[in-house]
Length: 574
Ligand code: DGT
Ligand code: CA
Ligand code: CA
Ligand code: ZN
Image (cartoon, rainbow, N blue to C red; front, side):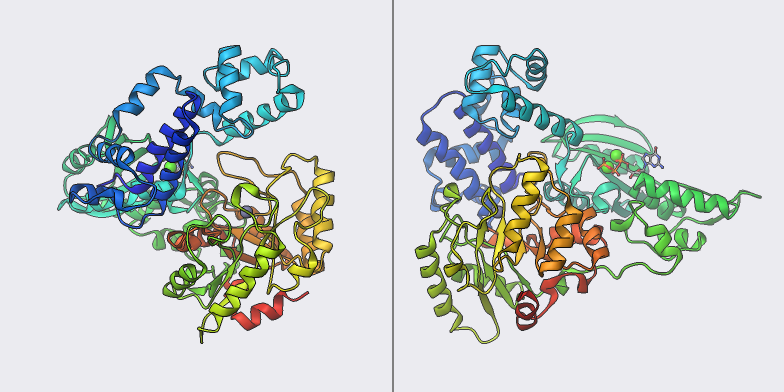
């Protein structure tokens, strides 16, 4: 049943983007984009509703035309109008449009005037100095496009972790249905909870590897079979994700799981330790060099034990000091989802959220939160319907009224206020001071040179109402590079001024990243883990932040919102 709402939304959105490139009616384009957003927030599976013959037009934003297309997507994975428009417009243009700073207007111009159909064409044109000559582009734009191409190349074609999860979980369920599989696990970057994954590595043990492989390649979501053998098969799933399945012997399961979980750098270190001890470590087990006798292999625990190490959780296996910490019995007690007591960034209908404050509060309580911060956007962010001081004042009053109804839950009055180019905040202190806390963020002028960007941020932090620096590098994975800053200096300043940094849990941001989290921890700077949810269905996204926090070595005490509401307010006060 793998056609889920996100898949449907992707296809609808792709169509909207194609319409845009085709110069279609703007209302039509907007309808598809809005429908895509709407579909992502629907909590019931549309595919199931289609199978049960339910009416999809019960959802606002989904009219007859889009409902018909959804039915076709559920049945065939695509719909014919999309195929038709794809014959007309080079699909490489979508990739060009995904580059930062290139909207449909500019992409159309590149296509019409320079015959640019894909990123390769674009790169060639840049190298010939052709882009800067185009009206409305210029040298600086050419420079920026070049940067985003480079960024895209470095990242390659990697899938967001949450999307990988949506493909992998149903596949695992399907594999478990087979009698002859015994053990089954995902290894690789997926098991290490990396923010993006290149491919999925599955391990299995069982009676008959041929039967297991047959079952695997027969999965309904398999688009093509790359290779099929006794011990290893590889396929592409619909949408392009590669999955490798390896069937290994029971007595090698732990060693194989360890080897294929990686990371490669971690493996190099563990093999080195094995050699020092006169052992050999590989995907089949741990062996004594002297007589080749196996001393471990069935479980990961015994593999680490044979190396004289405690078990190291997959999130830490990046060769960033975990081996040394393990040797010294000094591994961190990593934070878990249940340690978090609340969520300090989310939006309501006051700006660009999809739900009311009360709906967000209700959903948060159901997740067991003790508090939330409502952080609607400030006026500068016009596309997100940002609030001016008067509108924010109204929201403050409403939150006061809602809070009266709660005994053991609390909504913090907050805001996501823009840090303007000169380092001032986008709302006057006279209104900021009425809030419990403030999240300050950058949404414009990402490309300032380092010195100016640093001045902007440090100056903003001087404002006594600056409490949390939200999504501090402003990167968007696979899309926008981080702003150019000296993160060490920002962290030192934050410590000095009593400011906290956010780990934004949106799967597309995960900002701060794992390395930054570790940097903060080493300085004693506490982190806030927030969702930035725009509707109730995104509130569980905290777990993606937890994944990243664990990769960044954070323990419960390193994170501010593991504290009670009162304690948190006390700590946030400057
Ligand atoms: P990905 O797929 O790019 O997100 O990253 P991984 O870590 O899943 O890498 P992948 O799929 O190429 O290989 C899975 C694991 O297998 C990797 O983390 C470590 C192990 N491995 C693969 N190739 C090698 C190798 O040449 N040497 C060593 N030491 N380990 C390897
Ligand atoms: Ca992999
Ligand atoms: Ca692989
Ligand atoms: Zn934001």
